[in-house]
Structures are given as structure tokens and as C-alpha cells.
Image 1 (cartoon, rainbow, N blue to C red):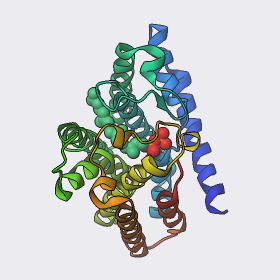
Image 2: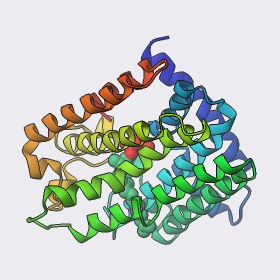
Image 3: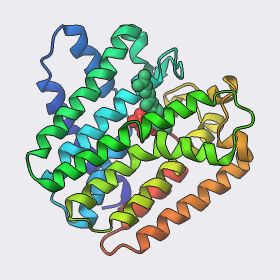
Image 4: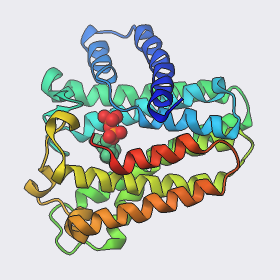
Length: 291
Ligand code: GRG
């Protein structure tokens, strides 16, 4: 199977889990259920679940052990996108090629949809904890990545430094490591924990570098991408005076740093025994992605 076929196979597998989760949602009122389903069913690359399933395969962890973790991580990711698009955050009218959640359901309902997805992700994780100590550690890891020592800290620093022309590399790294990196680290570290700790530190470093690479390509796409493939507004960083890697290193410099990070990711994978081909291709896919 080539990379695209394998990605599609992981996607199919995860989307089936997500579909059954969506079909099982029976909360009221109807607008709550509709707003949750709207964002979950818009699509997206599902890169975090794909990473989780592929890392499980690399480490020989059974699929049934990781699927609900992949689901919880995607629920958290989707909540973060809904809240990130709000007028008081990144103020984006489009997401995944369609109107943002608040444009369809209003700001109040979008806040609740995000809150609802986050709470439900925790329910999914709590249920997994019944399976034993390793599941508790894995759930704890996901929560730390999503919370005030992870994604929320990164987003808070991002808000704090909006329009900050004196922003330095150290602060930008803090923002990228937490805002984007932590939720890309969780899907590769969860299988490591569930395998009894195999390649834990290597995969943690891999997730950190991959997260920065992902955010750098996001910054590059904000300059060079197209709405038709990206599905969200372009040129917003500059328009809103946001200090990104492109502002710090220049477009060429950001691309060079992305190349270095991609090479670092590849080097970490080289040190892990097993079938690493798909993850290696995934790094290249992220480096050259158009959406
Ligand atoms: C709690 C009010 C409140 C807000 C939280 C935490 C947060 C807002 C936002 C998280 C920050 C965020 C959205 C980071 C950007 C990461 C990023 C590049 C997301 C895009 O991910 P993709 O490209 O999206 O994987 P798809 O659509 O493919 O799933």
C-alpha cells in the first residue's frame, strides 16, 4: 500500500468510530447536538487520529486500545478550532471550507459546542481509565497536553503577544510547542504509554518537533496557501499583525527551519525499530502540505 492508500485506510477506520460517536449523541436541545455534529462532520485531515493509529502500528499496540484516545484527541482538537475561530480569538469566518461554527449557530452556541466537545472528550478518557494503570497514565497525558500546561498555555501566550513586535524566538517556541505541539504529541505518546513505555522519550521529542513543523507550515500556508485548498482565510496573520515564524525568520527562513525540523523528525524515526515508512512519509506530507 502506498502512503495515500494507507492514509485513506486509517481515515476510514477512524471516521467509522467518529460516525458512530456522532450517531450516538442524543443530547438536547437539538441545536446543541447539531452544533457538535456540524464541526465534527465538516471533515478535516484527522492528522492526530491518523498519527495515533500509525504509531500504535509501529509499536505493535492493538488497535482497540488506542481508538478511543484518538477519538478524545480529535474531540479536543475540534473544540479548540471552534473556540479559536471566535471573534474574540482568531476571528475566522471559515473553517474546513465551510462557515465557522459561530457563523452558523451564533457565538453563544459555539462556545457551548466547544465546551461540550471538551467535556465529552474527558468522559471518553474517564471510561478508558477503567482498563488499568497504563490507560490512566495515557489519559492523564492527554489532559496535560490539552490543559493549562499545554494547549491553553500556548493559546494564552499567543493572545498576550498579539501585535508584539519585540517577540523573540524563545517566546515563539513556547507558543508553538504548547498551542500546536502538545496536541500533536499526545497521539504519538499515548501508544508509547500503552505499550508499556516503548520509545516514550523518542516519541515525545518527535511530537514536539512535528508540532513545531506543523505550525511553521501553517504560517507558510497563511502566506502562500489558497482558500480553495486550505478551507480557511489566507493572509490573516499579517492582516492582524500577528507575530509568526514568517515575521521572525522571513518566509525563506521559516521554510529552512521547517526543513531542519522535518529532518530531525526523520532522524528520530530512524532510531525506532519497526515499520516506520508511513510515519516518515507523514512527516514529508506535513512539510509539503497544501491544506
Ligand atoms: C478555551 C476560549 C478557549 C479557547 C481555546 C486552545 C484554543 C482556543 C485554541 C488552540 C489553538 C489552535 C487552534 C492552534 C492551531 C493549531 C492548528 C494549526 C490547527 C489546525 O489543525 P489542522 O490543520 O486542522 O489539523 P484540520 O481542519 O485538518 O483538523
